[in-house]
Image (cartoon, rainbow, N blue to C red; front, side, top):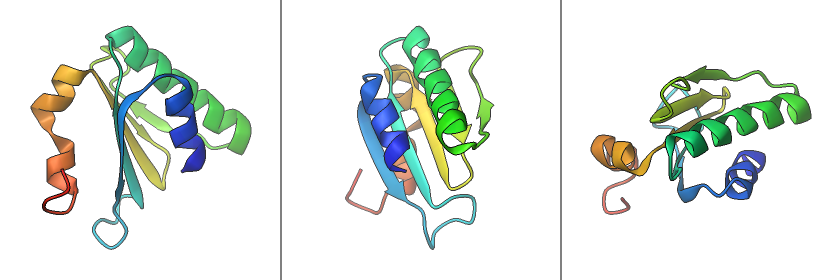
Length: 104
């Protein structure tokens, strides 16, 4: 988890939110949601994160949505990462769906 957050921070991700899913969902322990300023940045941050996790931990991640750069989902197993363009993030509002009441 720490490496995911540091990778996103290094690549200038904005509005990084970490959501604890333990006990709420069997799909992962944590969800991380962040924004990139452009489709290019969203794609770049996602590619770098996947590469870093593979190089440093030997962990292969499943990636969806990289072609358009609007919303990339990276499934690392324990952590699901969503990297959005701001407008797309606002539209889907995943934080409101997953965060405890009053936190989003």
